[in-house]
Amino acid sequence: MKNICYSYKYLLLPLLFWSNSIIAQDAADYLNNIEFTFKDVAGIGYEKGVTRRDPSDVMKVDQTYYVYYTKIPDAQPEYWGAGYWGASVWCAKSEDEGFTWTEVGQMLDVGENGKWDSQAVFTPNIFFADGKYYLYYTGVKPTPGNPNGEFENNNISDITAIGVAVADSPTGPFKRINEEPILKVSVEPEKFDSYRVDDASLLYRNGLYWMYYKGRSLLGGQGGPAHTCMGVAYAKYPEGPYTKFGKEILERSHEVFIWPQGTGVGAFASLSETFEYAPDGIDFMSNKLNAKVKERAVAPGGFRPDITDPVVVGEGLKWGISMIPNKHECYLVRFELTSK
Image (cartoon, rainbow, N blue to C red; front, side, top):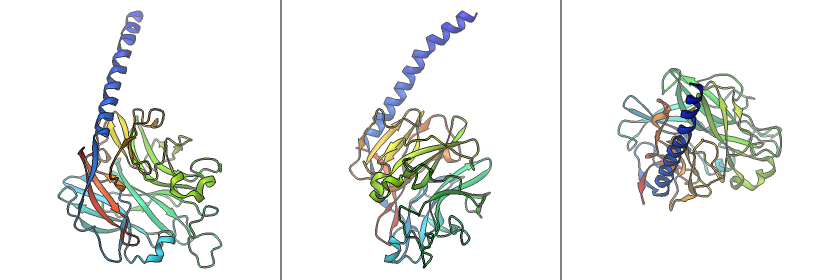
């Protein structure tokens, strides 16, 4: 019987490889033949003097869609260089698949004075697990020693970190799980994420929570976003503790945008303006897809049914919310993915 079992095992291996190859080819064919199109939305579109930017992935609860984003209600031109001064996390809801939105209100304000997130909280994302809603966000504090208590956004003493708050409802109230971040910069200067970690996006895969994030190195900090790469960390629980994979998994990926695609993971690398695919959710670079788009979405978040209902095989990406850069008056729009 043992030998028969081994025989079946080795007979199945080629079939499994063939099946996975077909799924990977289907994903590549799909991503090579889609492009972004955009439509204005009501409720979170352009508003004079207001910044709305960096939308989360879109979550559906019952018949209502939710998106979370960075908002500065009274943004001024000088805020742009002042490290998101006054930025906080807000939420809006939609009943018509993201064409019309009603702003719910602020979900998370800055932390207490002296805390790691006391300057600003921004680039949120959302995930549902164990009956609760987890709101992930990036935080910064004023630059140590700055006489005016301001954030200088330098690559020497200013760092970012990622935290999480939790609620029983998608509209809160959200409470920080603890006073410390759940993901910090690496201590080794040569690591790709020794200067910044930011922009969390969650998947539940293979029994673990995968947190994709962007990182930038102290060695490349002065070079700006062009040196940003995507990384990933894992945890048994949504609040952590998270263990980093240890190295970058996708280069030229300043904005983290991932989703379940087939049995793998799709991603959009914002700087190269390409769709990418990793059958194992990690290896995006050894056989890069490089599916170029004509007009890219900026800081997009996709509608992801798996946020509330984890899947083994993802249907792929169809629509979401992205931003229009407009100095201190950024605003949000809806995107769809259509065939070329």
